[in-house]
Amino acid sequence: AKEAGRNQMILFDEELRAKRLAAARTVHRLREAITRDEFLVYFQPLVRLADERIIGVEALIRWQPAGESMVPPDRFIGIAEDSGLIVPIGAWVLRESCRVVSGWHRRHGTVVSVNVSPRQLREPDFGLLVLDVLRTSGLPPEALILEITEGVLVNSGKVTEQAISHLGMLRSHGIKVAIDDFGTGYSSLAYLRDLPIDNLKIDRSFMPTPGSPDPAAQTLIKTIIDLAAGLHLGTIAEGVETAEQVVLLRDLGCDRAQGFFYSRPVPEADAARLIQDSTTA
Ligand code: C2E
Ligand code: CA
Ligand code: CA
Ligand code: CA
Image (cartoon, rainbow, N blue to C red; front, side, top):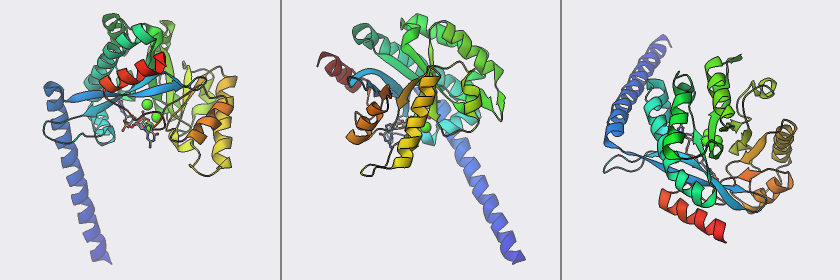
C-alpha cells in the first residue's frame, strides 16, 4: 500500500509538471498571439424582451492561431489571468469592441457589454484606459456595460477597494456595470446594496431544463428578478435556448436576454446584419 501511495505521488508530480509545462507553452503562444494579431471579437446579440429587438451585443474573445482551429476562451483566459497577459489582451478587446460598436451605436443605438477580469480592475490605470477608449472610439459612456464577476468586488469577504473606486468613477461618467454569472458566487447578497452596479446577469445554470416545468429553477429566477427590481437593478438572462424560456422570462419581468435561441456569438459582419434586420423589421 505504501508502494502504491508513492507511485501515486510520482504520478501526481508528473501530472502537475505536465500541466505546468502546458500552461507555460500557452503563455508563450499567447505572447506571440498578441504581436501576431491572432485575436478576434465575436458578438452575441442582446435582446430586449418587451419587443424582442436587438439592443446590444456582448463582446466575446476568440483566438485564431494561424493554420489551427479556433481556441475557445475557456482554454486560455485562466492562463492569461494567472500570467497577467489578460491586461493587454483585455485592453485590446475593449478597444476593438468599442471601435466596432460605435458605428452600430450611431445607426441603431446599439450598446456593448465587455467582460473585465479581476486582474484588469487591479491595475491603477484601468479607469483612465476605459475613458481613453471611449474618447478615441466615439462611443458614448452610456453605451458601454462592463461585465464583472462577484469575485472582483468581494474577495474572501473583503470588498476590493481599487475595483470599487474604478467602477464608481466610471459610473459617474455614465458607464454601466453588470454582475456576470450572478448567483454562482457566494457573499453577494449583503454587498449588493452598496456596490456600484446597474445590472444582474442571471447565470445560465438557472435556466429551466427545456421540456420540463422545472419549478425550482423558476422560483430561483423569479427570486433574482424580484431582488434586482427591489434594488433598482436591470436584469439580463443568459443562456436562453428555447421559446418557453423566453415566455417565462418575459412573464417574470426580466428586461433582456441573450442565448442560442436568438443567436450564437458571431463575427462582426454577421452581427451587423442581425442588428440591421432587427431594427428595420
Ligand atoms: P461568459 O461571460 O459567461 O459568456 C457567455 C458564454 O456562454 C459564452 O461562451 C457564450 O458563447 C456562451 N453562450 C451564450 N449563449 C449560450 C446558450 O444559449 N447556451 C450555451 N450553452 N452557451 C451560451 P464563450 O464565448 O466560450 O466564453 C466563455 C467565457 O470566457 C465567458 O463566459 C467569459 O467568462 C470568458 N470570456 C470571453 N471573452 C472574454 C474577454 O474578452 N475577457 C475576459 N476576461 N473573459 C472573456
Ligand atoms: Ca459575460
Ligand atoms: Ca455569464
Ligand atoms: Ca461564465
